Structure formats: structure tokens, C-alpha cells
Amino acid sequence: MSASVYEVLEAIRAEEDNNRDRGTRFERLMAEYLRQDPEWAAQLSQVWMYADWPGAAGDRRDVGIDLVAQDRVTGGYCAIQCKFHEPGHRIEKADIDSFFTASGKAPFTRRLIISTAERWSRNAEEALRGQRIPVQRVGLAGIAASAVEWRLPRTGADGAAPRRRPRKVLRPYQREAVDAVLRGFAEGHDRGKVVMACGAGKTLTSLHIAERLHAERRAGGRGEHTTVLFLVPSIALLSQALREWTAQAAVPSTRSRSVPTCRSARWWAAGPGRATTTVRWRCTTCPGPPPRTPAGWWPSWSVPRTGAA
Image (cartoon, rainbow, N blue to C red):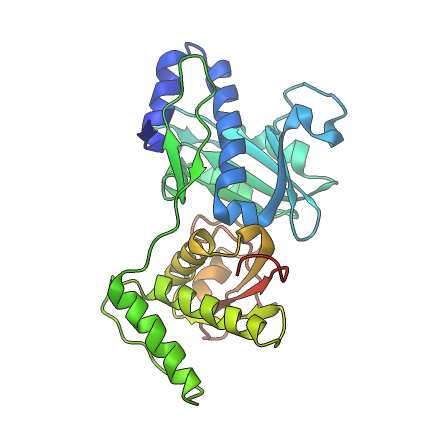
């Protein structure tokens, strides 16, 4: 039965009468969420419960790390803490101290805190700053915005595994826009402009244009790789476009790569060593004061000749 993530969590709260069992079920649910969500699946190749991670060597103690994931690009390990709190809880520094201690050394190269609580105390916020190993965080609102479908758990089950939502089908006017762009290129034009009303699906339309161009390049023997430079004027639009392209791409996110690059003052303020709930992807930044340039990212597709484009 389809449900919201809020309903799934309430079902777990109602069924379990102690926080330890609730926490364990939440950890398993989040492990599956990271495997199924297109954005996280593009970044993480494997996700383990900490005790099942080969690096734990069978250690089942509560060391403060709940999950471990492997970075798909670098091969490094991401330490993950899952905090299943009651509504209205505020995360204090003491809630994350053990996690920072356990994850602040090799072999971990990145860290992630997933929490049902959206409020953080000042001391907890300060603890995120200046960390040698970067820390990201995901709150309940971010989980709810994921491109996965949630289902209510059966009694006694950890929670029905979330599934990726079906790909959206273009509306007639969007298909018309895609065809017009491709027709313009076929007629010899080397550039063009698509003008659509707010909310008409420009991001989705642009994805289908890029995919059609990619398919034509492959069919014409012009290479197996397609690189797209996607420029946007704000971090909010960067996050929106990344989420839409990753969730809706015909090429699985596990076989493509996006490199977000942001040099805006807003990202810099929440940049290296600080957590951000705006962009899930780790962004590259400039080493000095950021100039006024747009945010952007480079999606690069590489698919086998026999694969679906």
C-alpha cells in the first residue's frame, strides 16, 4: 500500500514500544532508501549495516556509526548515522559526538547524518564546521522529496522497501518542443532557445532533448560519451535540476556521472566542512572568495553500445 514516509515512520513508532527497536528498523529502512533513491544510488555503490560492513570485522558494538556506504566514484567509505527522533526533537551536540569520534578517521572519507529531526542546536551546528572529513545531512523533508515510493510495513516487518517511482511521460506540448529543437539542429542551426511558462516542465524537457542528442551521436558513430553543461542562476535551481535529471534519466544514475560545481557566495558560506541540506551532491568549489558566476553541473553519460540510451 502506497504511503508517505511520514506514515511509514508513524507505523514503526506505533508498533515498537522501545527506541532501540525503532532505531534499528529506521536504520534498515534508510539503508534501502539510499540504495533506491536515484540521487544516492548515483553516488553510492554499496550500503551496509555497520555490523555487516567488511571493515567492521564482525564488531556489533554500538560505536555511533549505523550504516557504511562505498563511494561509487572514489571507492572511499561514507560513515552514516541515522537518528530516529520524536517529532519536535532538537538535535544536540551530545547526539552526534560519538559519531564524530568513530567516523573521524580512516578509512572514512565522507560522512552523512540522516535525521527525522529538522532542528539543530547552535552547539550541534558549530560542531559541523571545520571538520576534516566532510559532513552532509538529510532531514525528513529531504527524504520525503525523494523520487521513491513508500509503502506501509507489514506487522513485524522492518518496513516495505521503497521503490523508484516510474519515469514521467512527456506531455504533448513537451514532445512538440523536443521535436522542434531536434528539427532545428537537423536544419543546420547550431543553437536555439526553448521558451516555456513557469511550471511547464522545462527541466524535464531539457533532459529529453539531451537524451535524444546523445542517442543521435551514438547512432552516428560520434562517440559513446555525451557531456552536457547545465547552467543555472541559483543553488535552488541546481538542486531541482539535479534531482529531476537523476530521477528521470533513461540512462540509470549508476551509469552516469554528475559533477555539481558551485561558486556562489551562498554555497561558499555552507561550503567545505559544513553540512548542507540544499544540495545532496558534494559540490566542488573554488579555493578563494567566490566570483559571481552561475551554478552548474556537467552530467556525463557513458553507456555500453548494447545498453539503452
